[in-house]
Length: 31
Image 1 (cartoon, rainbow, N blue to C red):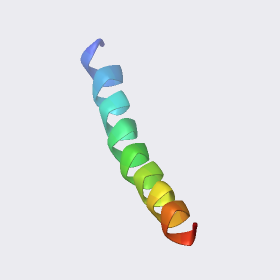
Image 2 (image 1 turned 180 degrees about the vertical axis):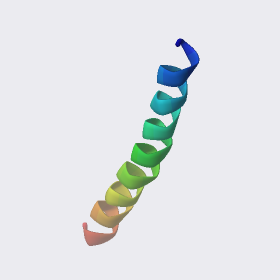
Image 3 (image 1 turned 120 degrees about the horizontal axis):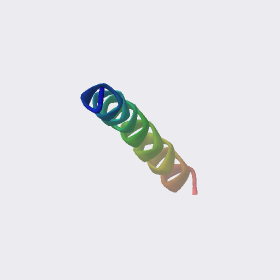
Image 4 (image 1 turned 135 degrees about the vertical axis):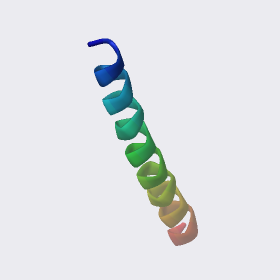
């Protein structure tokens, strides 16, 4: 039971981090 939330959390982080990184890059480029 403990591993499932951990895995889903890891997957969410992996999906969110690149997305936020790209957003920051776009904002920096725009500025």
